[in-house]
Structures are given as structure tokens and as C-alpha cells.
Image 1 (cartoon, protein in one colour):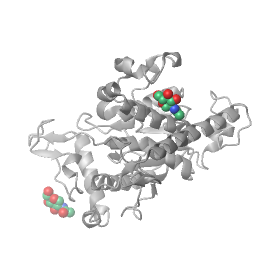
Image 2 (cartoon, protein in one colour):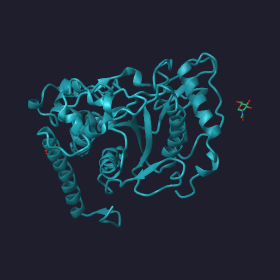
Image 3 (cartoon, helix red, strand yellow):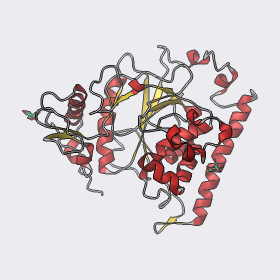
Image 4 (cartoon, protein in one colour):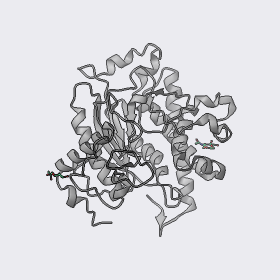
Length: 371
Ligand SMILES: *[C@@H]1O[C@H](CO)[C@@H](O)[C@H](O)[C@H]1NC(C)=O
Ligand SMILES: *[C@@H]1O[C@H](CO)[C@@H](O)[C@H](O)[C@H]1NC(C)=O
């Protein structure tokens, strides 16, 4: 990023950044207004001219085989911890993408650490800038909205829809475009409770916008959303994230899920509501079976006794926890869980093993001498 000297952020840069956001928002606003009046020249013209309720134009936008493709966008850093997860994620994307029910299109790792890394040849990657040093206040995920703003502005994306994904996602079933039918689709998180934080939410979502329940119980991922809608939301999401982080009461109330609330609020500010899809994702060890769900999210540690009893929060005799591998990848061929452990956990470890067994150079490329 221009202007970053000696690790300090110049005030000028902050002003430039603010102006940048302003112009992005301004241009989008102009685009939206001109679309509304029917004179739009953007990709979205056919949509905005039509009656949003009938959803007709989507039929024309599908590929020859009737598919309504979405692009998979994976935000990531160049840390070893992020890299090994991305490699497994991309492996499973490639496998399920070809299955008949899939509406998965292209894939991009949106790398927000500012420089190419050693996975550029393995995974399609678009490098964007991190926030200027200091602006993320040590909260690295604040870089996500800024990454999306830059990527949407600079990259050429063929698909009309985007899936926002994360490195600790493993596809277990071919994912259709859950946003088919007009609304973006999101996974409802049990711990995102806008109504219980009405006082804090109101600082960013004023009363005249509507009830606090307009703010969906979601984060930005997983979400499948129309590209044109995300282009509107992303700059606001970034702004709201930074404002929330700057407000001590909000920062304290939301903690590590602040940027999720920021996305939920930003989308509500644009009048966007999501279809809540519980089958979008499952989270071992709490969800026991994969069934027809689409993504395994392995954010929670899975700890079990050798009798197959969950010992959550206590290191298990058998365990799989991504945080055991902060500095480098897990070894190939992890031991499978003991009998009695839920199918979701068995599937997760089996899928990790399959990926690591088949990714060339799993244990050397990733040793990561550069860092
Ligand atoms: C950014 O957020 C602040 C506070 O939430 C708001 O006052 C301001 O208008 C926003 N600016 C943009 C460009 O969205
Ligand atoms: C994987 O580990 C198991 C023991 O946990 C062993 O029996 C098996 O041979 C290993 N497979 C490979 C391919 O290394």
C-alpha cells in the first residue's frame, strides 16, 4: 500500500483511505440511482429493469445447462495456519465442483497480506492490500471487508454470484446456488443475537431504518450473494467494522465476532435480508451428522475419550483441533477417532486425510521457510 513507511501510518493515508471509501460508495450510489431510473449501464441492468418479485431474468443468466453459477471467494492470509487450511479447502472445492448438483463456478483465494506467497501456482489467488498497519487494531479479520472491497473493484469475476468462504470450510456435498430466488443465503449462527444487543446495534442501525430484527443473525461467511449486492454492502461493512472497533462498548460487547455483526448490520443498512439456511453448514462436534448439509466448518476443537465420549474444553485422549497446527500443517494420515465418535467428526478427519494424502508436497512446500 502506498504511503506505509517504517511501519507507521501517515495521517494522509488515512484521509486517502476515507476518501477512497467515500468514492466507492458514491460511485455505487450513482450506479444504483441510474439503474433505478432505467438508464443504468452496469451489468445489473436486466435485473433492475425487471420486477424483482418475478425473478425472470435469472433464467436468462444461467449457463446452457441451467446452472446459476457462483464464484467461490476465500479470504486468507499468508500465515502457515491459513495456508494449510486453504489447501485442504481448495482440494475439496475441486472435488465437489464437478458433481451434478453443484453450481460452483470459479475459485479465488483473496490473499489480504499484500504480497504473493508460495501457493500462487497451486491455488488461483488475487493479492490485495491489508489495512494500513495499526488500522486493524490487532484484529486481523477486519481485513476481510477491505479485501472484498478491493477484489470486487479490481478483479474480473465472471459469475453473477459470490460465495464468501473461509479457510476452515470443507465441502462435503456439491453446493447449489442457495441464493436462487432473489435473496442472498446465509448460515444462522446461534451466537449472533442482534436483538440481545439492541442498544449497541442502534448506534450503527438507527431506528428510522426499522426494527433491530432486520439485522440477520449471521456473519459474512458462509453467504451466497449477488455480486452487485455485495458491491454495495462491502464498503459499508468495512466502515461499520472500523466504527464498531473504535467504540469501546461495542468492541467489548461483540469481541471476536465483531466483524460478523458488522456484516449483518451493513447488509441491513442496505435493506438486504438473507434467507437463513441451517443446512448450509455443520459444525462438529456439536452437529453429529453430515446428512445433506454442504460445508463442514471445523472451528471447534473435537476432543474425545477413547470410549468416544466428548470431553469438550478438556484435551481429549483423541483430538482434532485446527489450533494444534498454528505453525504448520497437520501431518498426513491423522489417526481416525475411536468408535462412538459422531459421523461428522469421522467425516472431517477422513476428508482432511484424503486431501493431505493427495496434495503434492504436503509436508515440504508448507514448511514455509519464508516466515
Ligand atoms: C461510516 O460510518 C459512520 C458511523 O457509523 C457514518 O457516520 C458514516 O456516514 C459512514 N460513512 C460511509 C462512507 O459509509
Ligand atoms: C495410516 O496410519 C495407520 C495407523 O493409524 C496405518 O495403519 C496406515 O498404514 C497408515 N496409512 C498410510 C497410507 O500411511
